[in-house]
Image 1 (spheres, rainbow, N blue to C red):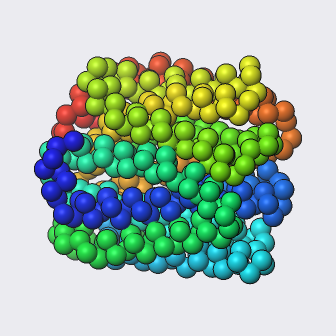
Image 2: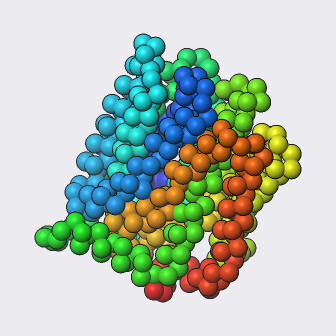
Length: 406
């Protein structure tokens, strides 16, 4: 990482605020299923709450993207933080009073997810506003590393806090959104370039972003292909929580197992530069796709530690792919379209993601654990085969700004 990158005051504020915010999110991500299991003892209910938390991303992504390209992005990000503070704070209060119900947990999860959808639509514009075009790939890689780091610390911290007192992970999450807002207020950069006044309907605005993404074959296929892989991680991580609890592990121990995924992501982010230098773009793309089937080891030996070992393999590959795809997407998209292109892409890539934990919950409630995990392995093998045979992945465009062909 170039030293000059971290002399950028606004980048440090942006990354610092998001470090704390994402850490809080990871703390509550492990606490949600643990709380649901304590209240209902139902794996299906845990899957339902995870579904409620992740579903707003694809459902609200496109409207959020249009708003990000039309209104002030900083203001929208602060509003998103405020909504999440209110939702998580209310849930923490219900847990403290002992009156929490399943519907309250699901409602808080859904509101938090909605706020995250709005924030995420604005964040790429904020990132590009504070760094030069030459620094964008390094900044995108730093963002991936930050996410990996909090995956390492967040789940065990959340599990430990839950073990001390059930409301604590949610209190920490609410406070983290307050810190995020403070960092945004302290930044000096404008989060968008000057925009021409355009009197166009929302339908026309959405179509602009969709046409830009859809007109590029490589980005189109990558969005669809990796959108489908997004059901694997959330589903198998929920399976880790449920299976770990069934096998007698404590909340802190389960948090530690989920954190192993974060350790591997962090290691992968540190190695991503070398991976990109050693492999062609097609090799980087296929590396993650063929890593997910490693979870077949659990089918042969149904132990939660074996499942986590299988998850470590794709976690090592994900950062290299993310740094490539993210720098393409952000660097090649005009600022006036960035929110919409991101929203269309995220809707494609995340629309299937909520099905992962929902399916995992119901599969684990009705089928043997081996069979439930085996369903995800079969999906992973199908996606890896698709990626290997698809012409867009076989002949990717050169990884240079401005070089991607339609």
